[in-house]
Length: 112
Image 1 (cartoon, rainbow, N blue to C red):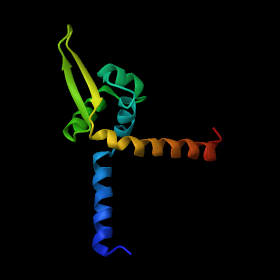
Image 2 (cartoon, helix red, strand yellow):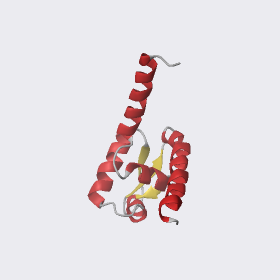
Image 3 (cartoon, rainbow, N blue to C red):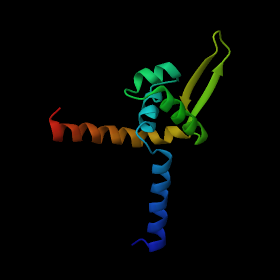
């Protein structure tokens, strides 16, 4: 049986994870980038409902937390491309589990 200290440490670790992934958009952005690197405009089109201002804010936060890589390509016009980092790829199995659970939940609740 886990001690109170071990349980507290586990809860704190989950809290830290949720803090990094908090908000409506980060997991959707990670999911979008899991299919390959994308330009800003591609992410904006693919993540339904996000505003440009919010996408910019989320991308900066995700870059700061080492979840995504921002690369400025030497092209005309200048192109910025985003991709997942090796570090964030560890989240993909968790996100797949969330996707599977969400699919099953949708079926249970609304039958689709």
